[in-house]
Image 1: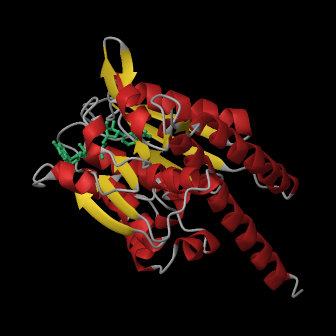
Image 2: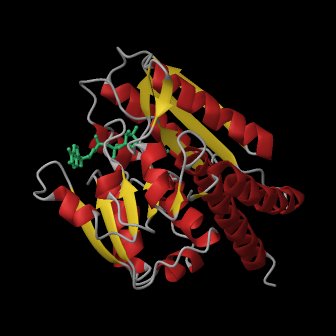
Image 3: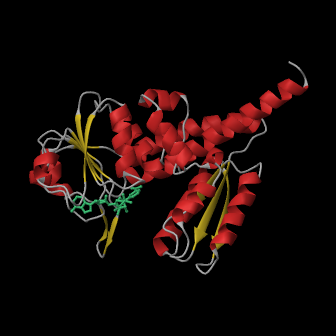
Length: 301
Ligand code: NAD
């Protein structure tokens, strides 16, 4: 049986570390603040936003939720984002995706100030992390990394999975998971292959992986015969079925061959929310730094 990489436990460790940072920020007069925007009545999105809001409350981050009708005009949404960009007590802005048809996702995401883009989807932030040489540099620079890939990296590192020199295969090439996790694994010195719906000989490729990341959105797609003995398997998939939520990996049989595996639920999901809290706190730390710099200019310290 494989080791279960417990996302909930790792997320709790990170949140405990964050609580200390947030207490410190509050003592300096800064409360981190997150604004979430939900457009429409997508039930899954409602759950995600609710979970994010309560995660903020549990850790001492101020949060405000803006719920808008699906009939809203793109211009009104852009106006709200613009207002939130200017609000000094808001360090992060999150627009829950997907957006209703008629609203251009790219336009909306690039309206968020790169300094408040805690989801890490703005072109500016994507460009920054693509240009950084190593994962440790990205951490040192405290870049806004996209939350799910960032969470996967922290899970691997905190579970002592050796990334450097490994062969990593990513299933899926979306902008929010597949492409960025491939870049992050590369920046930690893995040799990375990205597979997608047009990849031929998929099984041949996945069977080489020391680290296999599945992010395609097809329930139980990754079968035992697609996984190398001793591989580490990260299941990003969230598929809502009658029997509950299942991942993209056929968990029980794959568990027999791999060395370590993330469960669904309780794996990548809790890490994604936690990295949103990390990015929001990082943004608040930048606010404090700017405040201190301003004060030192005024008083000529
Ligand atoms: P997406 O639909 O944007 O992308 C899916 C990708 O899978 C595409 O690149 C496509 O080429 C690839 N694909 C589809 N069929 C394939 C096949 N037969 N063989 C190989 N590749 C195939 O999805 P996404 O937004 O990246 O999300 C993927 C899954 O991860 C979904 O289940 C989503 O709900 C889940 N997700 C989970 C979290 C989390 O926090 N756990 C966060 C984001 C997404």
